[in-house]
Image (cartoon, rainbow, N blue to C red; front, side, top):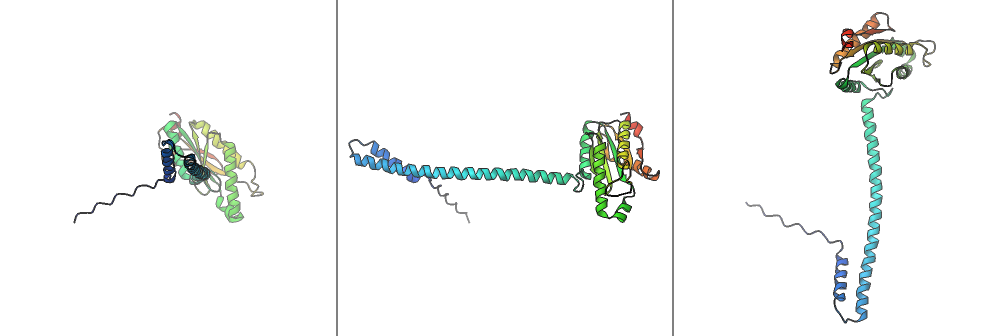
Length: 253
């Protein structure tokens, strides 16, 4: 069975139909000579009424448009703020504000596209005993203080991330291996050098591992080497910095 053609769409209403009619009548009167003056006045009066209504409605529409534009601008600003907030939360640790694990790996990949990258990983020593003996709020305070001390000891180009409960990574773009080792030692001293206010009478220390990767290198491999060096520092007595395997080969790149 053939389909019936759809009826044509109704024409859109003319919002100025009354004004157009009044204008047409006024033009007809204008073009006729010899009419009584009253007829000219009536045509002009009708035209003035419609013109005043048009002006009144136009002002109201303009005010409404301005108000809606202001509201849209406010909403747009709020959307941008929320989007930036969501992006920040997606890439940062909620406790410390440091980069999270995903963001660290993403940033490392970007750095390695441009230059070699040194990596420092660290783990707070005996952290479980801090939580067990002083409570998790004290443990959280220790983590935040460690990040603050890392920020104070790391250079401006460093990017600090919290990649696990008490594990951290610091990216050092375009940094040679010896310098990275010196910086890691400075971070170790910054943590161990004075007591934490949240743990009166107890020293907090951390163990460090360092590696370096040539430009376009594999960050996963760099992380594994630094992590193994970290465990060597743990096995060697903790509170020390160890260099990752094959570091000398990387430092010559």
